[in-house]
Each structure stands twice: as C-alpha cells, then as structure tokens.
Image (cartoon, rainbow, N blue to C red; front, side, top):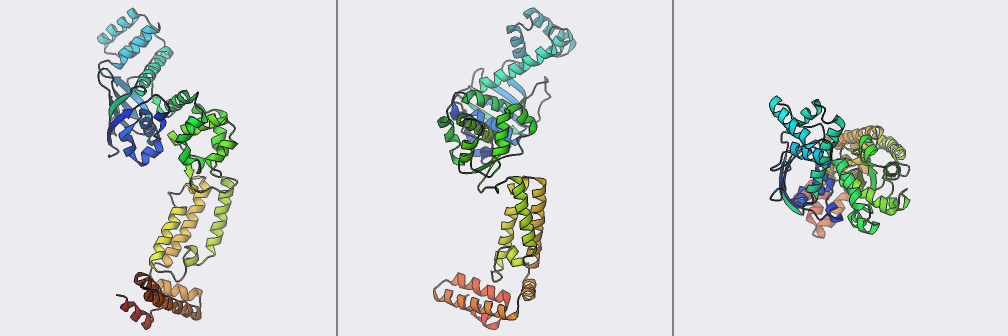
Length: 419
C-alpha cells in the first residue's frame, strides 16, 4: 500500500485489544493498517501528523467523512445529516437554545447567507462559549460513535485539500487518544496491559521530542511527566522503570501504553551511560579526544592490513554510530555537535585511505619498511594456507590485501593462480 492512499477494514472490539497497533510501528509498516482498530489508525495519523481525508463506511447511517490536518480533526460529517444540524440537535436537546430559536436562526441564515452558527451568535440566541462547547461535544460524540463501530471499511487519501473549517473547533488526536486510553484502561490491571508492552521490556526507553511541553502539560500529570523525563532517560530497561516508577504498576503500564501508542517515548537497544545526558556528552568528548590522536586505520576500527573493501564499510558503520539517524545525537545540541566533529574525523580518514596510492603512502608515514614487509609476508603465507584448504575467496581477499600494501611480483603471480 502507498502511504498516500490506504484502504482496509476497521475492527473495533471496545476493549484493550483495540490498542494492539501503535502509531510508530504502523509508520514503519503501513501494512498493519490493512486490518486495524480505528484507535491504531488514528494513532498513526497523530504520530505522522497526517493531513488528508478519511472515509469510513459501515452501511446505513454509519458513513462518515473526516478531514484531518497536521494530525488534528478539522471537519467531521455523517452521510445524510449535515454537521450543523447535529450541532443544532445537541443545543436544543441540552436546552442551550429553544427549538423556536433554532428554527428562527436557520430561517435568518438562509435569508442573510450567513451560517446558522454565526446567526445564533449574532442574534444573541447562544453565547460563544456555549456554541464552541456544543460543537466540541458534537464532534467528540461522533468520534466516540466511530470508535464503537464493530466493523467498517475505510479509505484514506493523504494530502487531500482540507476544506475550510466551518467552525472554530479542531480535535488533536494526541489528546483525544490519551483521554480514550485512560477511559479504556481505568480499571485494567498490569497483567492485562503488559502483553502490549512485552516486546519492549528489555529495551531502554527515553522521552522523544514528540512529547512537546504543550502536549505534556495537557495530557500528563506531574508524576507522569517526571517518570518520562527523569526515569526514562535511556539508562535502564522498561522492566526496571516499572519497579522504579513513582506510580503504581498499573498506572505505569497505562502511561507507557499511551506513550508508545503516540511515540512519546523511543527505545534504544543499548543503554545510555549512567548519569544521562551529561554522562553521554562527557563520553562523546572523550571519544573525540581519543580519535583525534589515532591513525586513520585505528580511527575506523580496521587493521592496516585489511582489504580495501572494508574501508567504506567501516566508515558506513561510523555514520550509523554518529550520523543523523542515530538517536544519541538527538539528546542535546552539544551531543549533536560532538557527533558531527567525530564523524568529520572519520570522513578525513575515509578520504585519506580512499585510493591505493594514498594508502601506500600513508602506511609508510606511520610505520617502517620492516613492519610492512613482515605484515605482507604473513598475509602471503595466510593466502597459501587458505588456498590449501580450498578457501579460494578467502585466499583471494588476503593476497589482494598484501598487494594493496606492496605489489611484489610474487604476490601478483599468486593472485593470478586464483582466477
């Protein structure tokens, strides 16, 4: 499936099983969305800050059209009933306005060309606050109805032009899903939530930059923020976090279910140094000092007799360790700067060892002829031994390493015998 157009089936159970698809995992593999709970699909939209239109069809009156922009719901329409009519029904049913006032507003709106909501405000039939609250509750209720549909087909088109909002209310899916998760898991025990976390128990969680202060201030309690900011620092596993959390095990499990669903935490396969960011920066400073004084081969963590093909692979490994895709550099601006300086030295080494003549010249700068001859003679013997054992590819690689250092005629002749 292409991410700009997705279609599939929404299966909603009304229970914890609806949290089986997380936004970050769906972003890595959108095939998970072919058959998913709506909660999982909305968490994918929230995580990717999606913009587009979502059509949901369950037959009869249960057909909906949602327009989303930057991960927030802009408009929501039910087939056969205008959204404004749904708002009016809510206002009348809750005695915010009378049925007569609603009818007059609709009549005046038709005559003036203004919207009914604008007319209600202009005529004083409804206060702005009550009007906005009515719109919010109506949208919320329609979303709740969507979440409760047992099964429905959907089509998603990303990048679709978001229609001009007909009201001042948008719903952030991050906050909607946090509230929904709290409601669904309020009476759940750790044993019921933990299966959703089991694959991550041995990994090292850390707060991601998706948990902005604005979201954290609205979505999380003070204790929850402290757990994510102070305990989830990438130095201990999720299993250890569970025992050190300021919250109960049930509440901690709920917090991580929410955080993982929306990408508020990221997971490392290896831990950060104890002490958090400051220790990480100190380690990077020491690494920078160390590699600055190393020769080009040692810097790239390869032996000076290594085959030339290993050089680029060694540099690529360093890019993974210190380059833009590594989470370490995202811990602080200083960490990113140190990683850039370390990677710059690695690039210098790649350039210095990038061509054969440059490598030969550099080897002679850092070691004497005796050591070079000893090394190449050792490789020559190892190549003969590999050939004797029938390891032709290995013999070829070894002798090519020797030729790269010193193109002695006996090395070249032996290389020809290997084909």
